[in-house]
Structure formats: structure tokens, C-alpha cells
Length: 492
Image (tube, rainbow, N blue to C red; front, side, top):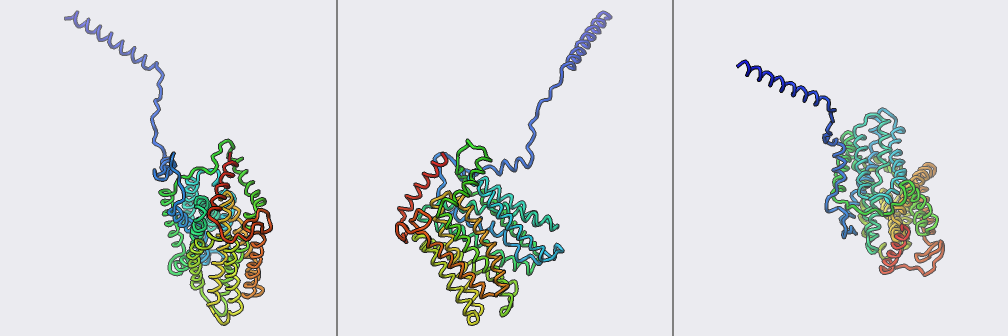
């Protein structure tokens, strides 16, 4: 028994010793941290899911996203929503000034920064349309606009509000990427109609916000219009994410660095303006007609607020409804006239309408009463848009649309600034009739410009090849093909 106990104790001691040795050996082995999969952050998951493209929008071998009327309508809606962001502020400036405790003159800095940011964004963001794929670029800009707009809804400090206003204008340039895209995709026989529909969306975005914002601000707090606009912006983000096709990158060349390619594009924009007559003439026409339009709408407010009308802000805002009527008529005119005739013919009709309606208002204003400004509003708004649509459609047919659109929009922006400044100066010195004479003079200058060069002329001046009044679809298509070949050879 004792021998058994001693043997068992020795056995237990031996086992304990072995266990201790194993423990020592285990302790001697250095510990190794086994990496565990960490869950990605909420931001990373959001970015990953936002980059996911629905199957029906994906670019796949054998599938080409060509012209589609539904994309034109989506682009028109996107242009209206984005353009409206730049104009909600005007009717609410007095209420915003009271809310921030500042003067009206200081509050006027808000729309100036919005427009300034928009102009800078056009110059420096729109050329990215020739570097990156359009779907992720447009979605990024649309989401950025939504974020800055949310900041505008919440900002209680004037300095923060103005800073966000500048960045909102800077990223609200998606319409200027969609417009050349539609101009490129549309076939020659439908290009003018498609471009006019997107432009009509932009003009709707200019006209409606002033009316709606004026009505909402009159009965509710002024920030309500900003919250409503935020809801529209969120709807736009969802629609663009669901239905905007993933078009291939315009220039697939990967041999150049981003900075070199970007600055080459900026240089080519300037070079195109100096070497392509159709683009130079189109830009000059765009500058002149936008100067007339901006001058009219700027001075109209002072004219209606004074004698003999004495209109209030709401009644003045209702004049913007006339612009809605013209935006509906523009695509119809584009389909039946601009797509069939040379740009100078369609533009001449618009300029003649502008001259006649301005003359009737200025020289028979006492007889027509409020009918005079209504008639001139229709003539100016409808007439000047015809020239812009006609020359855009002609330029998109021959040149890289995105780069040409940057110059077009910049010229339109400068024309609006010049028209606003000159119109206010002329009105202060000579009244409404003198402003009308300024509009007639600029319209006549525009008409002289468009008749310096015929539609078949290859040089800067002349009418070689005849008037070429009616466009031939076959020739347009052939020209399109040769232009596309030149673009591809340039990329190679």
C-alpha cells in the first residue's frame, strides 16, 4: 500500500513536472497576434455602395448607350433642379437680411457668391468631363451640392452661409456636363430638339424659383424654400444614381498624367476659340443675346415697381411665368425650324421678334399699359434663346461638345454680367425707353455678326457655297462621321 502510494506520488510529481515544463515552454514561445477582420467604417460602406452601379446602367462589352429620349428628360429635370439652386435666393434677400441682422446691401453678397462660384466651377470643373467617366463625376457633384445645400439650411451665421453659397455654386455645374453629352449622343436630325429640351429645363430652373420662393416667403419662414429645394436635390441624387448610364470616358488615353491631360484640355479650349470660326461666332452671338436678356430682366423690376404700375414683389415675380411659356415653345421651334435650317435663319427670326416687341413696348407703352412689358418679356426671352440653341446645335455637330460648352457658358455668363451693368446704368440715366434702345442696338449688332459668314464658309468671313438655307440630313450625318473620325485620330 505504502509502495503504491509512493509510486503514485512519484507519478503525480512526474506528471506535475512535465506540465510545468510544458507551461514554461509555452511561455517561452513568443505570442503572435492573429489579425482579425475589422468591419469597414460607415463612411467606407457608404462610398462602396454609392459606387455600385445598377446592372441596367453598367457599361458592358457589346452594349452601347446611345441616344435615348428618357435620358434627355432626366437631363432636363436635373438641369432645372440644379439651375434653380442659383435663383432661390433673390426673392428672399430681404427676409434673410432681417434674420441675419445685416443690411440688404450686404445680403446681396449671397447671390453674387453663388454666381461667382458657378462661373469658376464651369471653367475648372467642366473640363473634367473629358478626363473622367461622366456617371461618377456627375454623381459626385450632385451629392456635393446636396451636402452644401444642407449646410445652407442649417447655417445660422452669415459668414458661414456666404461661404457655403460660394461652394454650392462651384459644384452646381452638372447641367453643363449633361448638355454637351446630349448634344453628342443625339443624331443630327434630333440634336437641336434634344439640346433645346435641356436648355428649356435650365430656363425653367431660372423662372420658377423666383415665383415659388416669393410666394413661400410671403406666408412662411424663408428657410422653408431651402428645405423644399433640399428635398428636390435628394430626389435628383436618387434618380441620377438609378438611371444615369455609365458612359465610357471620352478620351481613353492613359499615357498622360492627370495634371498634364487637364491643362492640355484647358489649352485646347482657348485654342479652339481662336481657330474655329463657328465656335467664335457662336460665342459672340451667345454673349450679345445674353446681355440683352439679362439687361431686360434686371431693369424690369425697377420699371414695374415704379410709376405707373407700382407692383409689389409678388406681382413682379409672376412675370417670370412668361419665361415658362417660352421654354415650352423653344423645343417646338427647334424641331420644326432649327433642325431644318441654317443657324443664321433661325437666329434672325428670333432677333426680329425681339426688335419688334421692344419697339412696340418703348414707343406705344402708354397705349398698351402692362401689355407692353408682357409683350417685350415674351419677345426678348423667346427671341434671344433661339440664337443660343441654333449655334450650340451647330457647334456640337463639329467640335468636342464638352469643351465647346465651357466657352459657350463662359460667354453667356460674361454677357449676363455686362448686360446687368449696362442695363442698370442706362435705366438710371434715361429710363425704360433708353433701355429698349439699348436692346434694339445689341440685337442689330448680333444680326450683323451672323451675316458676316455663311453656313458653308470655311474661312472667317464670306459666303462661299451660297446661303445654304436648308440643312441636308445626309450632309449633316456625313459631317458628323468625319468630325468623329478627326476626334478619334486626335485622341490616338
